[in-house]
Length: 211
Image (tube, rainbow, N blue to C red; front, side, top):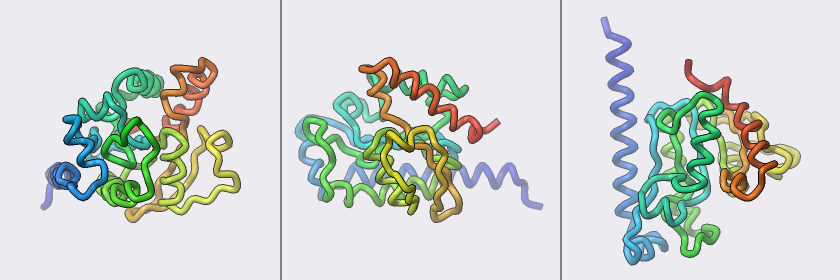
């Protein structure tokens, strides 16, 4: 008789291997308009980090300078805010999967171009399909708009000022998935009320925390 625990472990190993292979593809993405900028500044692509079977997936827009230097998502001041937000729902960074729509830093932290989004988006789609999260928390307006479009979620008012903290429902290739739009953690650095809003909004993720 097959051992369910063994099968689960093999499944997790397969997911981790798929994510590792995906990371290698991004590192070798020489056709990216951001590749030369990465090489010139000795930056790293920011693939994502966290368990390959995470229930909660956090998605931002694109890495900044600190992220590109370290190869890790959401470090520095905004990362500390994110860690605090996660702690408020009893989670540590190591328990969730964190990534971005675009995996390389755009110059001067500008918005990614449509060409860059089109090039990197398939990697995010694959990450979602490999990890199969129960819920995706989008960090900021850009990530929210991308994920809502990807999962064909069409609320009547798609402004983040109206949708933040709400649990929306979409469908990925593997089945149903919830989406919770959140403001970007960086807003908490400049606005105390926005930090309070973030702390309140992230509580919507609590029902998706694995016990």
